[in-house]
Amino acid sequence: MKDTQKSAKSTTAKKRHEGFTDEERAAMKERVQEMKAAARRGPRADKADGESAVLAKIAEMPEPDRSMGKRLHAVIKASAPTLLPRLWYGMPAYAKDGKVVCFFQSAQKFKTRYATFGFSDKANLDEGAMWPTAFALTKLTAADEARIGALVKKAVS
Image (cartoon, rainbow, N blue to C red; front, side, top):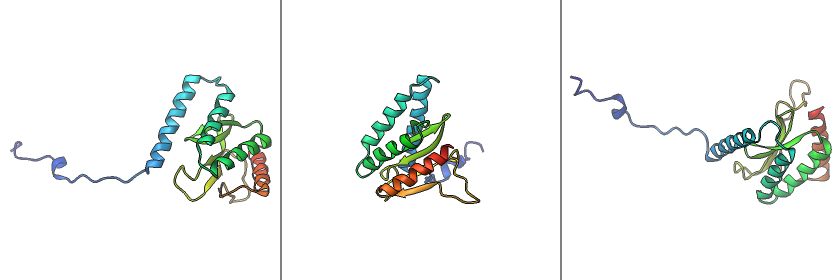
């Protein structure tokens, strides 16, 4: 009787699970690579390593994201010099005490129509019961840069 029974696997049609997108899987792979690289460098990783990695990632971006990334980098460094640049899921990010506070996501990263500047839950932006944590960017004006600078200062306070 055992010989005549078929396994449930062979009679069940295989279903394809549509989970993460290709872009999300790529971001996760980048994060794993970042963590491996950080482990190789050890706890005393040079902050110049993080900055050069962020600048290299920004240089890879298509316009207008590349220009916005360069400007954001300058604004963040001027507003909160204590934040250390680093890569986070393949995106330029800025951390305090090893925890990401803010990040810049190119529109190309997840094939969206706008770039995103966002804050993590480590950012000190709490204001009542609801506050914004991410902003869509299609271009940066002087007023936008001033607002982002103020938000970054508040985030690290």
